[in-house]
Image (cartoon, rainbow, N blue to C red):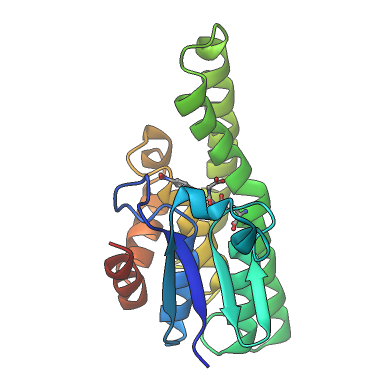
Length: 207
Ligand code: GTB
């Protein structure tokens, strides 16, 4: 049984693999699972056929036999539970990896997205010049703590895990920003993850 995931027919990120089909593709490559891609236009995302799979009319989705999923973090967790390679076997280490997965999507990602939204949608607003330093500072606070926690380690907790995969995907959205460059260990962490053959295969496939 080969899963099918959905992706943008034409991603607005122009090939940078920032849309959320990327963590799913990457996870599938890490565990060595073949998969099919169904590419959707923006109009198709909002059609009933797709909303039946993804209530918010977004990508990605994951279908495999009777399993039908949405939410990239949940899909990555499903893949990680299903096949070896993305979560440690030892219960304590596995629990820690789960914490990092949720830290990525619910503690770090929201402030990164808030900053993106401010930059892309509020530039012409009267409050922009006051709001940007505020949202930058919220990102800085998270990056400072993440950088301190990672320290000189290669990965967040022992071996590479789904926690690193989701965290790196969030940090990649800050690529080129001075905020990430303030932390050489985070820059190296992202580069280390991007050098993984599975990341490279997923990146090439989405291009
Ligand atoms: N929480 C959901 C998940 O993780 O699965 C969020 C899914 C989501 O935001 N999907 C976006 C989508 O389908 C694509 S990834 N949007 C269409 C819509 O809502 O109508 C977000 C995204 C979009 C574009 C870029 N980019 O151009 O760089 C990066 C990320």
